[in-house]
Length: 358
Image (cartoon, rainbow, N blue to C red; front, side, top):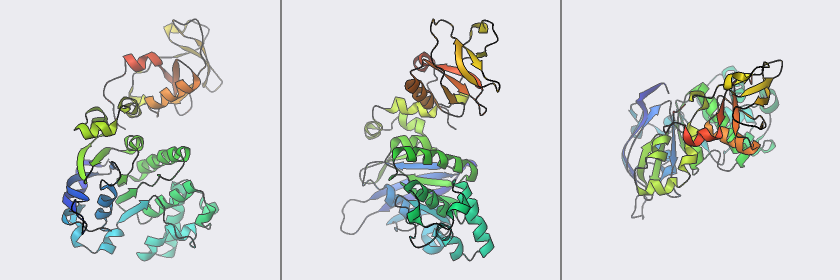
């Protein structure tokens, strides 16, 4: 986050009431979105999440209140000019079926009058960014791509004109769970590179916790029930509605906030024929990568060696241990060399009570 104190988007007393409806879709919403942050909007169906998102780029006009984008009141500017400054990605992707992938990505730059060479270079740059080789994909049509690939193109199109703000309405909602998780990981990697200010609507609390710097929990009638970090929402629900919405799985979800790289791991030792100085000892290959446990202090048996990257979370470590039926996991660096170990019993007795964010 480039400047946590500086709001890129500020919603001041925003309300939306549709004609013929007594209850507002959104009411008296005050919220600031910091520059460079990912803010997740979550809540039950019909609670005003998508309406709020659409008011930000004036696809829907607010009934009252102000929306400030980088200090400018967007309710006073030309809506078409505003939308060219904001990337928009939706669940249905909305790619033009008769356009090539390159032409789909180039829509807004062409409207803005970019030169052909600049557009072509930008298309290739974005295809690389979302993991689609330009030579292979730029001349294809949407029907020739999988759902996950189409979503990547949708993200690329949203980024095409290099907007400061991205609005995303359940972009991974219609994707199968395995592809969805991979897209989430790729999305976080892209955000590390481009550092956009992102408002992201989801129904999935696990997705909100994984992706969000902040979470806005909406309740019935378009009321903002709580707005805070994932740790705050999971650990300190603002009221009974939020507590019930978060549910009984909050403790498990908090494991995804605990980064392995920030924990004090148990030391491990490469096998040199000695006793291992009282630490778990592993056998390494020629490149220093662990291939098997040799000795575990206090244990008469040697479990299978399973690994998890240092860049992962405690949630990832638990998943690996359960899948491998192992009482501990070796935490490895980018070269797959062990940096320490995490034991199952440490999860219930020694982990810190507060998560530390990325």
